[in-house]
Image (spheres, helix red, strand yellow):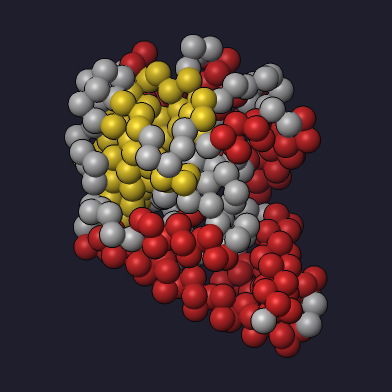
Amino acid sequence: MRVRVPEKICDGLWMLGSEESCVYVAEGKKESIIVNGGMSYLAPDVIRQLDQFRIDESRIKSILILHAHFDHMGIVPFFIRRRPELRIYASARACEIFKKPKAKTTFNAFSREVAKRMGKTEILDEFDLSWTDEIEGTAVSEGGFIDLGDAALQIYETPGHSSCCIAAYLQRSKALFGSDGVGIPYKSIIDTSPSYDYAKYLESLEKLKDLDVEYICADHYGYVKGDEAKTFVKKTLEACKEERASMEKVFLRTKSVERAAKEWTDAIFQEKPDYLLTPEIVKKVHEQIFRHIADDLEGR
């Protein structure tokens, strides 16, 4: 079953944000943590939702970023300015990206593009949401834990969607935060995105597929619970292989990364006209994927 609206998921775990960009709060006896940074325009909504669900913001001591793409870390600058003492956890690679001036410029530009698409540019203008300051991250890695007191988030390195992607598992709630390293539950389908490395994406899914999961807490389009959550990672594996085969056929027919990416992007927006990202961003992502496909086919 898929849930699209912010709500309390189970004891000590909430989904905040919006359908298209989800943020989670996990609460422990010692402290609480925000998991995923979402889109920048979510910041005022998240503050309102903390109050709505009676979540004590003062107990939130950290934010866990699962990978360093603009649509997964947008609220970080806002919360760091609001709460300078917050710890920012991420992979070592993501912590490096936080410091790159070019990356910050990209975060801000893409955030504005998507805010415009969603009709929310006034929020970016009203609030101080841009990446400008130096933000120090604390690196977490495979096998590490973030201790919340009576619960802990276990970290898995899951490159494939990006080089900096990690996943976290909250055993107490049997909740997996897979970010885009696990499928995106868009409407009734599973969207996959091995945009960095297809083989590593599959390896990462293999690593996660046997976890005892009751909740898939996705970064986009809500969370999944119950029987569907139990098999979601395995079904992501199947969906990824099927999509890869289709993309290879498109590339072999078009014989061009540019043409293949444009055709694929056009098809995506015919099927998903309300998709979060802009066509320009989606095309750039798929150009990268088709370049990998071209290289792989050439090496066979």
